[in-house]
Amino acid sequence: MTQDSHPQHHDITDDMWNKINKVIKVNKTKPGSVISVLRNCQDIVGYLPVELIDHISVGLNLSRSEVFGIASFYSLFSFVPKGNHIIKICMGTACYVKGIKEIITRISNEYQLEEGQTTKDRHFSLDTVRCLGACGLAPIMVVDQDTYGGMSSDKVIDILEKY
Image (cartoon, rainbow, N blue to C red):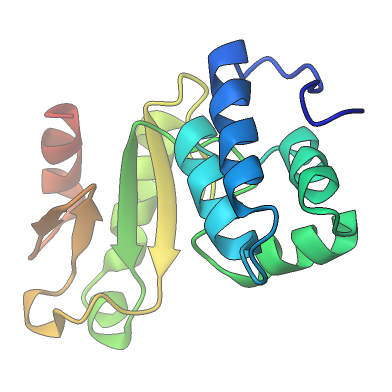
């Protein structure tokens, strides 16, 4: 496969491939550029499917396992599509003690959405995090850039319906 050709993938348009190829071309000769290439490509596509990892490895002349190893090490990279809205649920001690598990269960039941997954319509992704650093507001949820404290299983659906 040449750098100008690309594999077929239903989530990646020709326009996206053109942008991806430009990112690779600009960074090809820069040592240690794989993380910035992965970030830029994930920004273009929304996640890193296998075909894209392969394409990046060929373009940067690195092994597939090296590129995959770097991408899998950092939590900011995702190998599955993310939703339009990212729900982050804090699993820190304060949030856990104050009932965050019930909130996760309510989200799961309402949207058929498990931790680390995305809804079929790609509207929401649900991620759990160790701590959001706002323990005084526990239990806490962040949707995109919006922080919601004092969450309850009653309030969570009303908030998510706004998205």
